[in-house]
Amino acid sequence: MSTPAPLGTLQMTPALDRRDLLAPPVAAALKTLPIADRILVAAIDPDLADTAAFCAAYQVPLAASANCVVVSGKRAGEQRWAAAVILATTRADINGVVRRRLDVRKVSFAAMDDAVTQTGMEYGGITPVGLPAGWPIMIDAAVAAAGPVVIGSGIRGSKLVLDGAALAELPGAVVIEGLAAPVG
Image 1 (cartoon, rainbow, N blue to C red):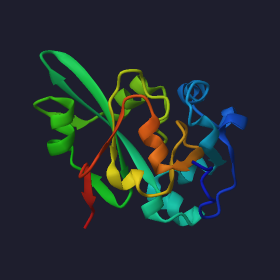
Image 2: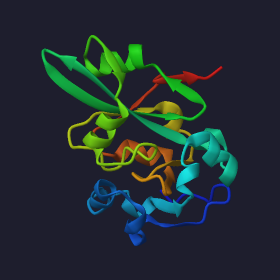
Image 3: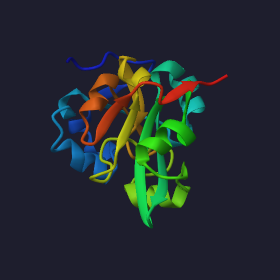
């Protein structure tokens, strides 16, 4: 698989060369991931990290922007954490697909403080790269089929760019058809 093509006006460089643009768990994960040499990073204005503002400012199509949401639920007193990766043009089926995959009665989006504490990443920059060991990473099939996608880097001041299919190579990742549905 080749390195992703440029997207919008992002100035990209190999992520391995710019660990200063990554959250510590992301930089640590890149040391061991076979896909690390296929991941690019681009510095951005942290005030423009939220999806809509980012896409508008950097001319990246929403269909090439992926979001990583942290969810949690309990089963038999055990807190279970997971991540769902979906395109910005879709909404995750949290109460259906995600709940069943996590095998909990009730699942919810993690509170901001909990998501930050659990991942070691900044809110608005959470990425599936470098999540805690053992977390399921549910990737919508549309993300895996999208080609190059932009996703968080663990901080608000940069974004990662990689082929959506490469996300399926992350530890704990599974591609799921129907994880998300189009918004609207």
